[in-house]
Length: 217
Image (cartoon, rainbow, N blue to C red; front, side, top):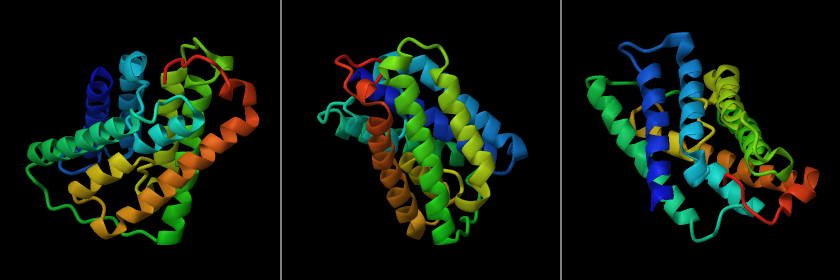
């Protein structure tokens, strides 16, 4: 239960930060990705020792496929993450005065590519800094994960919205930032990237993939 609670809390603050910094009034403008990356970083450092600090269904699937998350934990993680995102979306709408935000218009092909690439990058970073025997005990894993999202948001945020996370896509949809008809783009791209990242990790770090004891995730 502790793992699921921390996944809820971490995802909640991630989505709360996203909505609070990108939605008017009082949005953070060009500094929004910096705040989002920082929020993810501190939540990873805060609860990584409890749940692995996934805060992202794609990360959970990738870690599961890599062999560091029990199959019995996957449903609980996904439910906690989506619930945290949904509650955060409601809080953002309350704090912002229930603004009428127009959903982002995307090109499906470009958005699919952008979401796949940076979700792949995010899952690959998580697997290599937080689950590999070669990097066991490092002190930089939270910074690396947060900065990956920061880089992705600045790089392709204007193309896809920069979700890289099905729970974030759900929260953004509930806030009116994404169209409900387009949520499939994020689900397909994010989960495909998660599987690709797990396969890539096993290819480049077969010894790490066979590490007998889980570390942070």
